[in-house]
Image (cartoon, rainbow, N blue to C red; front, side, top):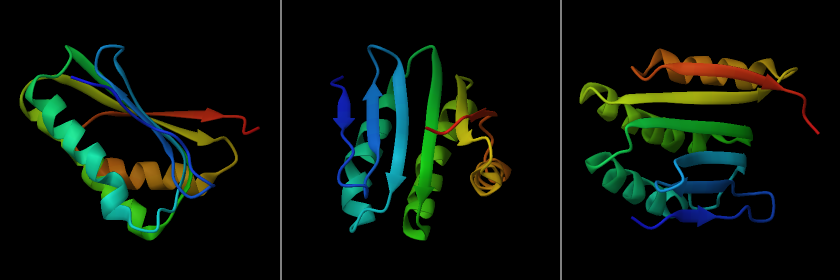
Length: 128
């Protein structure tokens, strides 16, 4: 399975690394794509394939500093895909990184968690 790497673009799209071989699944940065569905389509497609034959342990890291409402819906859709692994008895978790002084991003992570079965870890960090 080929890795999917999408680099950040002009402060409107996040960096995404989905690499099964290296066991790295992460999204970071700002999510404000003009066409949310088109931007995230390859991510959804990659994850659908990954779920068919996942690694023994899956950790998805989210380190977003901002996302708009349109991104929020598709991020929830992406996070919900990890529930499929949990339902199949696979080990999966989501690590939600948030700037230590940003209560809104922490609250967003907790709101996502309230809608999912996948375990969450919350890790504050000092923003550069």
